[in-house]
Image 1: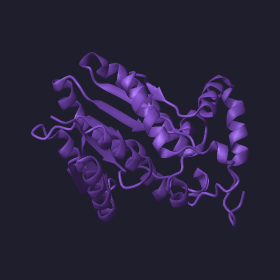
Image 2 (image 1 turned 90 degrees about the horizontal axis):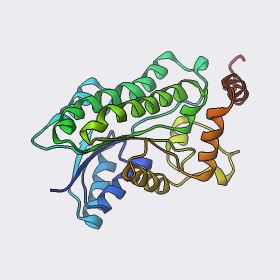
Image 3 (image 1 turned 30 degrees about the horizontal axis):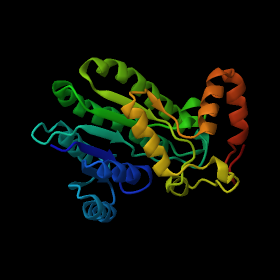
Image 4 (image 1 turned 45 degrees about the horizontal axis):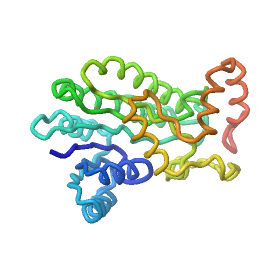
Length: 260
């Protein structure tokens, strides 16, 4: 019986890259995102190229009813899901003090509350079957004092590391995927100006996913792609937090037209 993988934020970027990688391994997929047309196009592509069975589940995960539908699908023991990829997310263009509170709350819900809820729905089945995995997409931003986005991603990484210990006796693997700047739609959707970034800092989504699946197979707790990001992650863990916070604050400026 094929492994079934449910991926949130599956219509583009890392989510679509995870879908293609798992399909290439012969897995069946449950694809979750808001854009039904893009999900159906991806499902048709994967069915044509890999022969995978793809269930399309359009859902705005910030809508309580839609979130409950996805949670119910994860808890459905008649159609068991073996692997959950918590990937859905978005960022904001300005530092926390300059964003509408409603936008900050929506971001926090999607980055923290949604994976908390969906993981909780899946775990009883994984424990009973004594196999499966949860992959939580975090960010190197979570290693640094980088505003509320970084704080939410720090939670995701810590949550993953803790859950990994709790689930290890049941044979369930948990991995925090910690990418740096990756060539997806994320920055454009967030309205971020990344024009000053050098080409060398960018990762391809396929490379992030390939590294994550290797690290999952090796039962590692955290997956960081690229030597420069691994060195970066090591360095920031050992630098004084006050120094890092002040350094990062210099890079976070108020948006144009708002007082400093």
